[in-house]
Image 1 (spheres, rainbow, N blue to C red):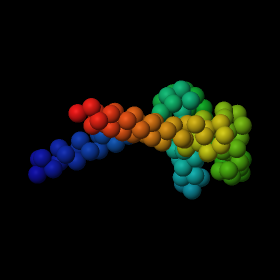
Image 2 (cartoon, one colour):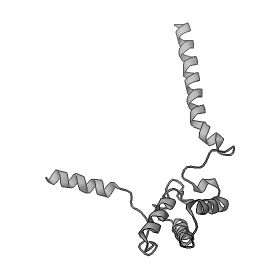
Image 3 (cartoon, rainbow, N blue to C red):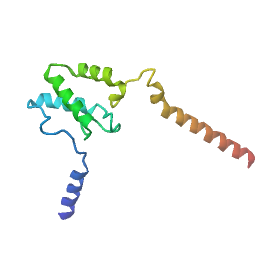
Image 4 (cartoon, helix red, strand yellow):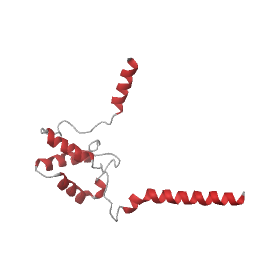
Length: 131
């Protein structure tokens, strides 16, 4: 039983800590859930690999507050996303949309894989002819 308790404690401690402070949270649970969904899909511009919802950076706290203020003002999720994209660019989204400017970013893994496969095939074939 002690092992199960220790494993459960380890599991709980390994979960990501959310950085939303209690004073940031909205009183309306439905609005708070919408705010959390929005900030979970926004990239922290300071941390770059972390969602705004999880980041401790001051800019992330400002973005969380901004999202909540705009929700209280009656803005939709799409309106808030459009506002943030206009202000910070597509990089503020955790999954930026496909466009000509992000096309290379989306295609890079496939290009590297194909290039690596081609090089490996070339060297394997060349080694077969020599041996």
